[in-house]
Image (cartoon, rainbow, N blue to C red; front, top):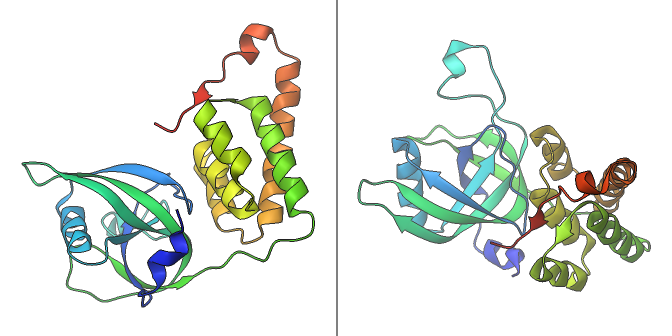
Length: 224
């Protein structure tokens, strides 16, 4: 899986799918159910062209005028539809692969029911000399707080790119949306890894003080 290959023809204009409390990371996959007319149109247009949709969080707003067009956070994730199912009543189910981080430059004045924007593709900072050690420590701490199934463990052990490792773990673990958004907006893989290591270290320390029954309560992770 090489998400950078998907951007060779990307011109910086994309469809926006605002969702409050949902954060997609590059290299991760999220299942989505589409039922609103504007997002049915969005999906139809995406499937008929480049299959790209940017998932981005909406901000809470008390303004009545913002109900149908809520303000957005600055950073989201450009995704590509991997598989889709078109239901008889016009709804869709599809799997969206996170491709790259994006920052909204400006929203566009468009005739479509859904929103569109000019976006900037964001690049991770280059790996540092300590990235490999952080990669090893992050996986070690992650394994202390979750039970990984064989497929997940093999995938993470084979992953040498710290940025990809942090994104997969950040997406998979049930952190609050605010924390996930902070991790998505951080372009320094080393800093993301250190943040995750500190969080998991604190969780495992707390678990060490609990009963065996409480420690066993963490569900195994699965690729399904």
